Image 1: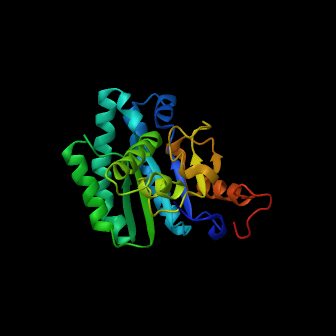
Image 2: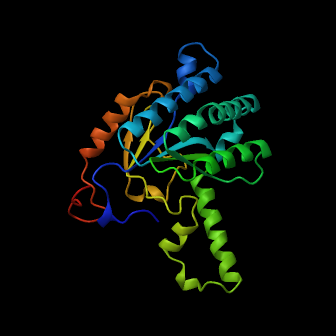
Length: 246
C-alpha cells in the first residue's frame, strides 16, 4: 500500500519518472527514432547517478508500457535491444553502487530471453539497499489493477477470503508495487501533462511535476528543479492542514 500520510518522509523518498520525448528529440534533429532512444538511455544513466547522489531511496522509471506494443515492430525491436544492452552493460555498475533492481509489469508472453534478463537483474541485486530502481516494463496501471482484482477473486472463489475483507489495503498488497512506498513525486518530461496509465493507484497523493525538457536532455539539474518544486508544495493527503515534515 505504501507509506501512510502520518509517516510521509521529509523529502521525496520515492520519485517516479515518465520518460517522454525520445522520438521528438530525434525528429527535431533529423535523426532516426532509435537515436532518440539511445540518448534516452544515456539520460537514464545520468538520472540514476543523480538519484543516488541526492539520497533518493526509490526511483521508478516507465521504460516500456503495455501500450507500446502498438508501435512499429522495428521500433519495439530497437527498444528491446537497448534494454538488453542496458542490463548487460550497466547491471554490474548498478550492483557495485548498491542499487536493488525491481521489475514491475506483466511478464506473461514476453520473450524468454527478456524474462531471463529481468530475472537476472533482480536476483543479482536483490540484497542491495542503497537505492531501489523500479523498472516498469510491459506495464500498464489498468492491467496491474485488473490482475490484482483477479487474484483476490480467485481467493474468494477458493474460500480463502471473505468478500468484505477486500479493501484498499488488500488491493494494494496484490499490486506489482506491493511493499514499496507510493511515489511522493511523479515527473513527466516533454511538457505533456498526463499519467498515461502509469501508477494510477499509487499516485493518489503524489505531487505531479511536468517539465519541458525532452527526456534525452534530462539531467541532474532538471531533477533538482523538479524536487525544488516538490518542496514548494503543501501535501495535505486529503486533509485541511499540510502534514508536518512532508
